[in-house]
Length: 91
Image (tube, rainbow, N blue to C red; front, top):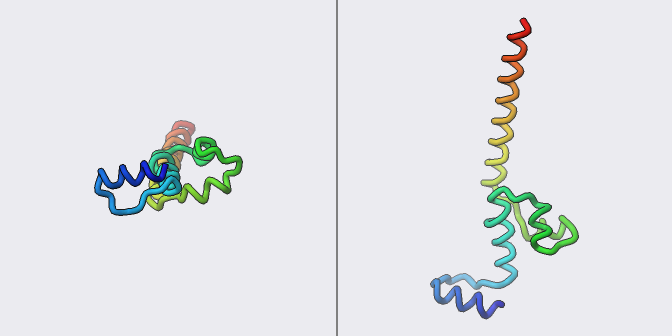
């Protein structure tokens, strides 16, 4: 597997050494987690029996944390607006 990755890196002129281990990290972070796939799902995809094991491969990206916090903020704002509308109807 590593030999194939080395060939791919050569063809693509990638200077960094590519290994199966690096490919798993990249899949876990860039392909799955940063696109909203839950950690539990990634764990199953990687064949892990423990989420703790997956967390070593799947480092959460700061960008993902920021995006998730913006989604949460939007949900809170939407709920506050709906609660305000509901309370004004009752008055």
